Length: 313
Image (cartoon, rainbow, N blue to C red; front, side, top):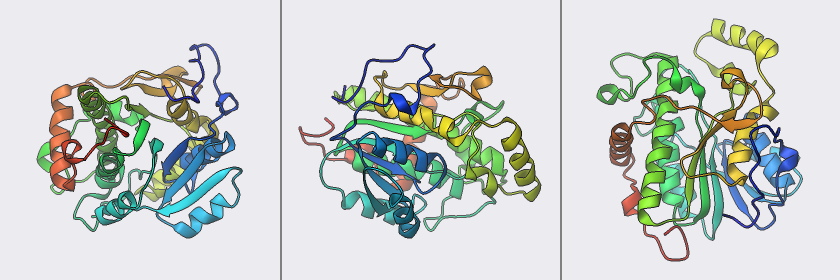
């Protein structure tokens, strides 16, 4: 347990960002920190005393946000849809990193292909965080937090290993849901490997419930964007509430492999509480198969990362 962590909160206590412990001396990386949940996560971690690295595609936007934050921050470029950018970010890292928050993502966008030839949602939401996490593991001292979604629990959602990049057919929502299932399988397999290696580093997943963010404004259909804008106003919780599971999982004592989301009805709203995974997300065979495929596609693997006694192992 990191030295900043407070005693765990019980389920009936409404944990908020005001309950964050003093994070002085701790370093955090938050991907996708220029807007939405990432911006709030970065803001609150810095406000509590942590040193926060905003890992963002647009350095200009990142610097603009950093100028508004209270506390210690810096901005570094990272494009999770580009393996060369991920490798460059990791190669420039030096020194301990307490917590990596894999927050960045895209949702239900039209089918596009990355510079590496991968379907954009699967790449940005899963392959990018997979590669980044493994490349940074030699420096991570406490935990990895990955933002998933309760959309992974929709009926019939599974990993399509035969058409992982949706080349035969493409549904923006199914591709998104598949990538979010991948986040959970990745978290569970990462925790299994960390435990097996004797590492004290832990892996955690979170989801924000139904939170009003800018993701909904980037979906494939104009009609869907209009509908989501309306339902955001009527039903969604605030982005501040949506960021609470990330903040909670990044700073509170939790068992490895935990999954945290809003504690209200349907896990759509509310304060942080244990969340439920689909049966597929709990399947160890799928987790190992996805890991092997991800390692092949990215040329990055857990076993290939050198570890010294002062870091993850």
